[in-house]
Length: 346
Image (cartoon, rainbow, N blue to C red; front, side, top):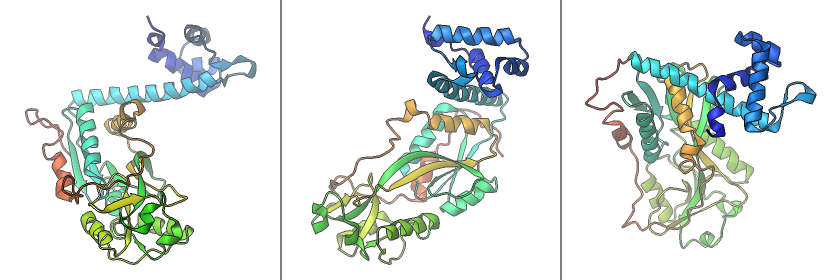
């Protein structure tokens, strides 16, 4: 039997009770067991793992190993609780469809990953998606008209929980024959009154204002432009020499364009799943925990992405504009198998 076989839920519960209550005696009272039972089980756990969880010379202060164990115990017991509640709800056919909102800045591959994860985790449970501008989606979330929202930051308010799923570097798009393309990073002074912010003005005002503020900190005044979500049009304007533009590092580029970072900064576009702080849906909580599982998603959700400065041959891989129809098509078959009966809807 391996050491991890001894990490039973009961022992984790005992350990966490001692941490929260502050003593073996108080933990025993909370769990309706004897003090000797708590003391014996914690001692047994320490002996099995050959570690000391509590610094006995300083009361019940946690050791470094104890702090790690606390993190593991909290996350494990919380996940178990959500799993049990969700399992019972599925058995009773009371799991309601997950109403998921998303903004235009959520990319198709991200929606595909989110949808696939939900279907894999909760087969037979339906996801109902809807799109809208960032403020609209967040307003519907706060009004309890949707359960969660996929948006890009920033998001204000203490009434929501924000779980960052991905960070993608924000770069400057320019012609490959532009003199600035010879630099590893673009000097901020070279962008003053020459770079435009196309995609955030209308659909995510908070992000637009934050970008203007960050540009101001670098001494850059953005060049005025009419907002558009059509990335092909933006790249065409850059290619025609009208301006520079911000672009995500992972975006495919038209032939003749490159993307470079701004010297001295490391800006990112942060994609997050947002839910109400008072959300009580165990299936949603279990879903969020699955999305944030570092072992499952390390290869998909890196903290930073490498700089993309090599143009993509337009004849082989064209930049595309993702429409609401393209995004919704990911859910067109629903999260429920067509051979399965649908669960009750709201």
